[in-house]
Length: 370
Ligand SMILES: C[S@@+](CC[C@H](N)C(=O)[O-])C[C@H]1O[C@@H](n2cnc3c(N)ncnc32)[C@H](O)[C@@H]1O
Image (cartoon, rainbow, N blue to C red):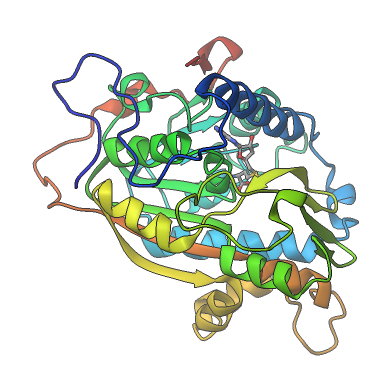
């Protein structure tokens, strides 16, 4: 059955009825709502508190090559799917780490949303060029808008009614934070589906549930990792079995040196795939990061990009290559590309980008509450 927001509906549409059985041990909806909010805040506070690093601090990071590799993966996805003049929705945009990538793709309009106030503020200063004290780069060429809010809770079709439809939506290293409950996972996908134009593209990266569960099962206890990361599941998962009737709320604690330290949720890919279909999107591809690297390193332009970003070094004299432990972390992630069903409307012109600004003041940042 097709899901989504009805265009005529003026009342708030709750996430549609589940195909998955309710958990009989669940205390009450209220309790679930409260703990869900607490976890969402925990995630927001974690990212808000992460301060901008200087170039020297960044280069000294124990996962610097992993960060560069992830930037390469995001750059390849953007180069593959973004077109000149595109209107882009960056869900969970963080500090705006992808702004330069979008600029290189010559997009026409950018809207970034994140739950973490601190990250949105960093994104704002980065967009304005205030963060770059050396003024080494030109100003961004596209107008932009920034929004602070929980994009897995709020109906974004309303908040962004005048900005939509978007040609491309990106959610990098963040969609798994929606998988704490079925309602949030559905809200995330309903938002993307409602805001993308027919034929529009949804690109993203998120943890690869198959790899994480495999590693959990191979581990002696509920804890595994290496010198740069660890993952710990709660005792409730001591049997290491997961019911297909409850594919949401499978929480673990993730620690990645110099990057992440907060609760995350398993996204069983087959459930994700069937859910996106309910929201009128089809899977174009999914690739674990290892496979992604092998595949796109066959193309000279992306080899050159990898060399420029410096993630894998030159494999010869260059010692600055990714460590085995960083490469193992890369294996924990996958990339996906989805397409919104329908034929693109070639007659529609994009007038909404005058909502964006070329310089964003603090007052321009919209705060949206549930
Ligand atoms: C690992 S960071 C990735 C940031 C950015 N996409 C990137 O690739 O550089 C995850 C981001 O997800 C954001 N996030 C988590 N839950 C969110 C939510 N419910 N709504 C909006 N953003 C959320 C965090 O605040 C954080 O900025």
